[in-house]
Image 1 (tube, rainbow, N blue to C red):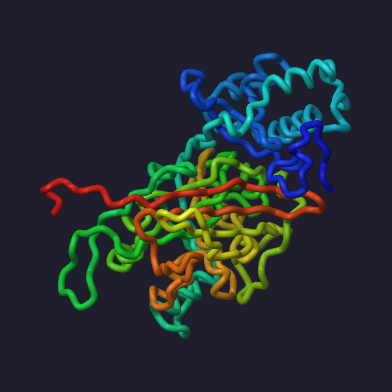
Image 2 (cartoon, helix red, strand yellow; image 1 turned 60 degrees about the horizontal axis):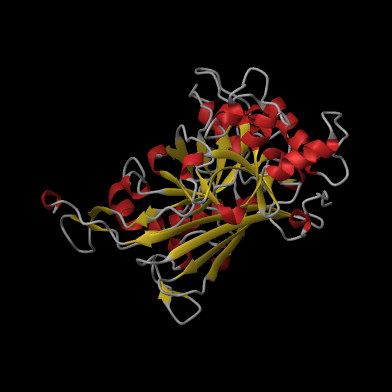
Length: 436
């Protein structure tokens, strides 16, 4: 049920940021760059300035982490651990609730409400930034429909999935340096391409630039080098989730990926939404994973529901148009391996995980064309064009195209929203003379 707030805009049943949600962001006041980046929490159509509340003593930082609310990212707060995360959420819910504002016995209720009111910033007056500092980035390949579609295109239906796919979450280490926040321009990448029928490659801008609809799990607790963690422990380490678009140059990828997998094809940019939706907010939407075609090894077996019922949508708006066309709709629960399983497997070799590590789930596609999370699948390698409102067609992205990804979990009379993950393709930057 919707948890009512005294902030009326949070009580709209389709508003993305009700009291049930409280997503975390980093923001600055538009037009006031000197004020710096601040920690914020979304409520209705506003952002609650956490630093301002801490300065007035209405909320206190976790013990031993006194500077957590003065930092320009959520990493120092994440380091305080799950108990501190839960206490912080509970305090915010008391402060913002229409019914429970004095239940915790902390401070004067009316005085606290006045302080909260002064700390509210309209979202329309704020600029959103990276919500956390990305330590390292790993991208998985955990969507069975995506893996089956891509494998069928490249190897035929009889060899669509590699022999290891049903036993292990496949992944690769990506570039943390090019993880960017929603709205950051993305330039078409240059790379080595091998045109059909050519004997040697050429160095040219990608002609088959693509998207990948994913979710990103934000690691909030570190692990110890040499010590694997269980699926249950891994789940506890995850602070929350963002929407993630792993931009992909398919023609660069086709030439480079054998034998070690993606490299430059995935290094251009990875865009994330600016709001971290916490594990606690998503707890009511936990669902079991899919039926296993092959029994997993014991260390990967889930002790309970580890997936989530989260609707995901992708829209494409061509250059010069004000109209966006929804080109895909799918659900988080289509993933074959949950982020907790991915994180568990990541540590199985003794690999240390750090606060701020980002795990991309891999492309989340469903069983039909309308559920596919990449243009490669929707257009089936470019053979079947996508028809947009206004009459235009796309097989892959063209310069000026904007892609918007959204997600939400639908509750009883409320919605847990993730905001948007947006990016616009800009033309390739002219290389220096020596490069061509």
